[in-house]
Length: 395
Image (cartoon, rainbow, N blue to C red):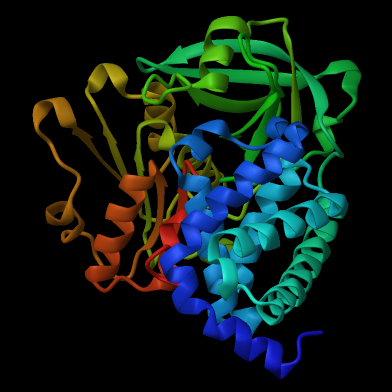
């Protein structure tokens, strides 16, 4: 257990972490992968290359230092990260490896400033935080719909929009009984595969399109040509995984979920805002809301390049026909249409808002909604990237 002297030392390192945090985490990943190349099978290389993972970890470390007197204050962030860890099958035995290389990176970057007292204080801090993660993740493993990665067969593969594939999969040899599986709108599954021309296995999270399992488990994948890895996993799934092929999935995870306490009331509208493939989890939310209470006012807001890129158009129309109070607006960037503050100002208050899209889209939407005095408790978001990287200026 941390003593007060150690807590004081950790708090004193906050300015240093604010200045050198990303450098420390960059060194950390470099050293850890050099000694444990098998961990490259777990971590997202794109997020590494773009610096998102380093920023997310630096933000988490900084948050721990700032809240060392009351670590429960960062528990929501710990829970978010733990969902990812469980989905990736991060186990207790991984934590000592991370701790060793995090302390080594602090010492390497800070040099003489990282005295024995500083390292000892951070070792105690890391041990306490690791215990919290391990405890939370144990419960998540216990609650998971299935354990480890399980083989599924692709039974449907369809194009929706210009660059999004809709997959439907069923467990091989009934290893998972879908009749006993309850999916939650907003969750994601994790695909484990070995892409062509890659030295490592690769794991990626993909949001569920539906909570229904009659046809199988549904998820969607956007072709990615925007980064140096050219969508390592997403393009592999588009180009090389077809009906009849097998893929490995871990059980659904995630905390981007509908507020169930609001589903059956009709006074606070549900507002679903997405861009591109960010439509996937909010589509499952639309379905779940209509399944539960079609009378609740629903506002559907979607942004993409043009009508040809619009995903799940028929499914949205079919669901909208079942709702009793549904409004829809699409923003096409090719036509100069912008989803921005001018539109957000037209939304009533209070509203229960769920937003999904790229990191930049998320930052813009959440910041603007907050600036318009929408209550934080009604703002929910899921970016396609490390969520803690969004908190860099907020911890």
